Length: 376
Image (cartoon, rainbow, N blue to C red; front, side, top):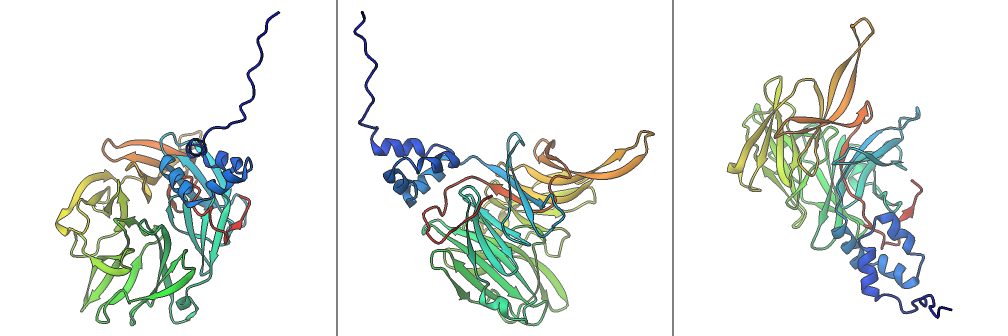
């Protein structure tokens, strides 16, 4: 008779540091489940050190798009997350705020503005934080506000910048909110009194965050003329600045973007083409370079770039009837490799109708106690 026995259960578990290293390589949902195993694991997982480590090790890039809810209530929005490489759908969730406008995305944290309130939402952990309106938003004299979302890597602070302004006549007011301080602070006016700001043009586009600064497309009127410039906000010193564009006059559909980590501008040139300009050395005007000329045929809307530099646009195409006549026109969202001009369907027909951004899953803000849990 064999004397072999089953190996005893290991009562001495793996070293705690090794366990954390294993957990830091797991997807967010798996990590959250392991919080229930031990109090020590929960304490470590919710700590800022582990959250940072997990963020560094899980940098899989995805695309997130917003569209009206599948139900008739258009005040609700649906987010769809797609794998950047395969275009496969990963997840969908409803935004738990009414009339939301996407402000920005950073490290898996989404920022929305909705009815003057601002919200930080991490859909991966199902938590959000509501921020009361900026003091200037209560003033009826300001007709519009632009908002940007930025991240200060040295302090690990997430911040919101709001600019409230008139159509003409008075310098704008600007305020900043830090999620760490939990309060709004007035900033110095972004323009000198002798410069008249009459439009910040972001449309449905997000203010890109590049080289530690936010960027908006703006126009100033000098005498009887108007010229474009890029309004910047340096998050490190909390100051506004002005950056010249490659153009002396206003161009149509000019908007700042991020292209492979660098500040970029898209310019509609010839009716059938648009140009991609990139600032190769940040802050150096002479480094503006026109890198690509991309066919514009049937492009209805320009959405931006993926982290890998793919151009995301909406193109129109015809639906034909059985007798060969054009029955209707539909939209398709596609990605374009602007070096090879290879096109790929992203998410099907008429699938996404609102703004989009790059996205990644993370545990950011899991360590905060002032977050509200929401089922997504």
